[in-house]
Length: 251
Image (cartoon, rainbow, N blue to C red; front, side, top):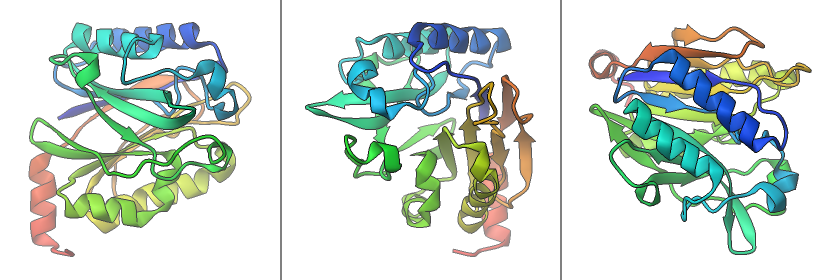
């Protein structure tokens, strides 16, 4: 399975500009059909959960601009796309990512709500309750969002349910970059699974990206340049996962 990570700068609150940039970055890459494409956490708005009342969408109705763009991009590229943002639910919100398929309607997509909301989200955002798994080209993938990577039990539970790869969509600040690097490798090594992690960048250096794909043995498959908007890609090998787990049967 081929994966593409879109490391981009999101202008705070400039949803239409961010969506158009995201679309152009993907189309310029000409991704291989049936690949998986990931965007950072809250890529359409920037990480500004305090503005959820103004910027949230209903991703279940899929009639907002973010859902519409992602649905159309999946159909145009023939790829599966993970993207989302602040989801309006009742009088509150969740931090949601959705899997958009080129063969399904937007309202039928798989979704995941962040199980561990970060501090700025905890007042108005409801925590998700379930792990989400899906399969693309025989690879079983579990989703996570940013702060989730500090909680290894979430990943161990997903591993027990058959996860072979984890996606991480983040707005992770540069000041804790060493934590980002360490936790991602730990989640890969302890679960003998690929970690596919995409982060955003910002002009002021608050976010520097360091998007990456890590193999089940903890080695880097590919890593983005720090502070640079770019799309990186890598191949996820089911054969490598199975061989590595067989030869080193930690579990």
